[in-house]
Amino acid sequence: MAQQTETGSGAPGGAGVTGNRISARIAAVSPSATLAVDAKAKALQAEGESVIGFGAGEPDFPTPEAIVEAAAAACRDPKNHRYSPTAGLPELRSAVAAKTARDSGYEVTAAQVLVTNGGKQAVANAFAALCDPGDEVLVPAPYWTTYPESIALAGGVPVVVATDASSGFRVTVDQLEAARTPATKVLLFVSPSNPTGAVYPRDEIEAIGRWAVDHGIWVVTDEIYEHLVYGVGHHSMPVVVPELADRCIVVNGVAKTYAMTGWRVGWMIGPTDVIVAATNLQSHETSNVANVSQRAALAAVTGDLSAVAMMREAFDRRRITMHRMLNEIDGVECLLPEGAFYAFPSVAGLYGRDLRGRTCHSSDELAELAIEEAKVAVVPGEAFGSPGYFRLSYALGDDDLVEGVTRLADLFGGG
Ligand SMILES: Cc1ncc(COP(=O)(O)O)c(C=O)c1O
Image (cartoon, rainbow, N blue to C red; front, side):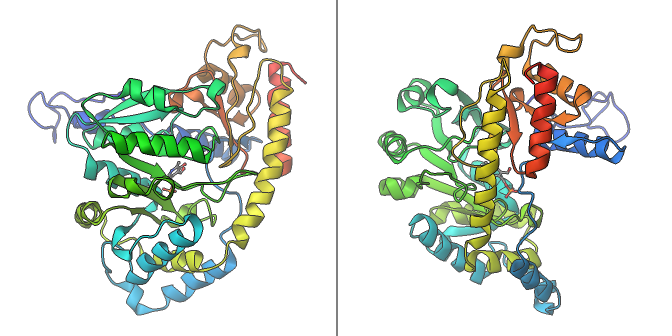
């Protein structure tokens, strides 16, 4: 947040003679660091450089054929050429409710589902619907870059609760309790986590859910990586703690499970008063999600989970390779991620070393060095509120993965 403020001084179109051209609220929004890293890698590639990009948060597989076919058929049907209900196609809302019961055991009605432009809009809607100015939202760090921005845009105050590798990047009830104030309204919870790959076990989810119920705190729980877990289970907080349901919003979508990041379909599930309020907001912002994308999502959530099973197998293999190779680099330490498709190694051990004539004192500087010297794009921990780490996505081909980490090992002196 609060990175660049570009102000004008009474230029035409400004708010007044000395008015700021951009509102303070929007000027305080920083660009998405993860998208920026990806864009930089792609720009270098376009210039002919051989860049290995660990920045992107998306599966490297195409969307399954049956889903694409459903979308192609939807394109030809004129009923999809028109506006449709803001909250989503009725059949998709029902299918999301059914899919949720199937996959996590959470029983909800179609009226509790709002279809959004990706999980990202569900996050924004959730905080807009819940936060009054000054309401505090607890955000465990390392956090996905979008959460604090969405909270601040909604008028809420993100309160960061730091975790590190010593607790597996999982927040504890004691830490949450220490951060709680009379202004605390919401806890943001995500498991599996972007950026750390941490997955909370059932007992910890239960403890956190009970703490939220005891203190009347809302939980926004992001389940977008629910199917990408390796050897551990995924548990949905309102299933583990049913009493939470009246103060719980579940965020999810098709992006990661079905390799559909570009289709922009997500959803939020919550109590009907929150869903109605968020639908009213969305009716003035974006209206319905593109019908063709909704039809594709319908095919996805009513189909089987074979595509994600195949991707999970590939990600699991790459996860093991990446974890091993990163830990072989002197100065780099990496926990074994249990979910999503990110590794989050500590690189603080590289500070102060002579690396090809340069010395770095932050993960930001090290990431800059990696792209310049090794043509390897990683996202520095600063973007996730946790300096001293890199985030590397392992959603890329096995050969590229090995080549990229080998280049880092060469640069950092480990191989
Ligand atoms: C934790 C988390 N939640 C939500 C999203 C939103 O995904 P989308 O808007 O593509 O559905 C992402 C995407 O990177 C994510 O990592």
